[in-house]
Image 1 (cartoon, rainbow, N blue to C red):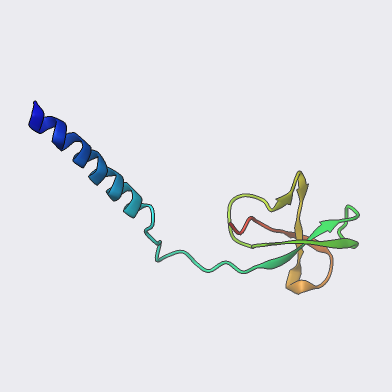
Image 2 (image 1 turned 30 degrees about the horizontal axis):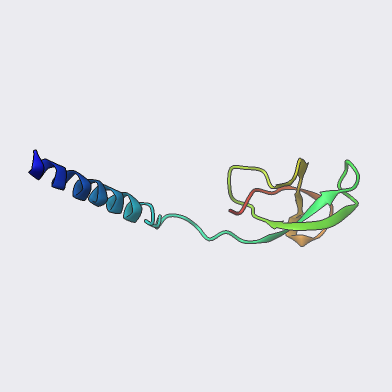
Amino acid sequence: MKRLSKFIPMAALALGLVGALSSFTVNKDSKLTTNIQGYVKLNPMGTQCESSILCSDDGIQLCTVGTTQIWGKVNGTGPCTFELKRNH
C-alpha cells in the first residue's frame, strides 16, 4: 500500500504535464488571419458607417461590440455590408 501511495502523485503529475503539453500544439493547416477595419452601420443600407474595432474575414462567431454587429467594406471602400467574424 505504501508503494501505491508514492506512485499516485507521480502519475497525476505525469498526466498533468502531458495534458499541458498537448494544449500547446499548433495546427499546421490554420491560415493566418488578417485584421480588417470594422464599422458600425449608421443606416440599414450601410452607406453611412462609423469606424469601430478590428475584426477578421475568417471564423465562426460574428464580430460584435456588445450586441452591435460590426461590418466591413468590400476592398476597404463602398458601403459597410461585408459580414465580419471574430479574429480571436
